[in-house]
Image (cartoon, rainbow, N blue to C red; front, side, top):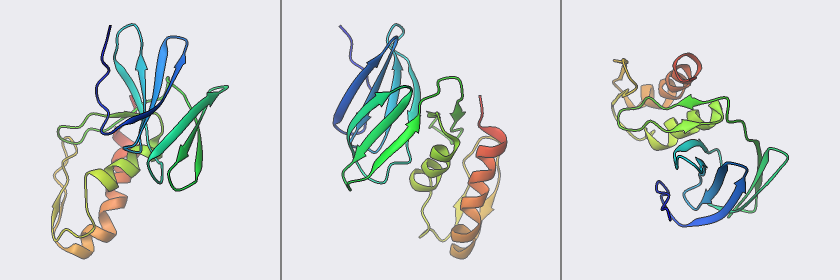
Length: 149
């Protein structure tokens, strides 16, 4: 009937909650889709390793990771934080998960120089020490001031 796209690796768990589907994936992300429109509503990150299993109870998602940890996160479809990085656009349900995404997926502490690709930002970090020290705080400031939908 329908194929839901957007997973980076194998899907390990699927939970249906009313009109949404919550999926866990080996790419360390949990995604929430609206069943009727098939739209991806949110992404949840912050997992320390691949998400091997997941359950939802009373609006709390419990994700079991490959490293043996279990992360409990409240699902809230009314709060959204958008990644405005060039060619990204993921929408996270938790601001801290967006910060983790920016630091781990859109940067590297080993870079000698770095240009921020957040919309309307022209920040440039001209040394490896500036990238390591200043970039995480810079990215966090974007999330705090310019990501909530």
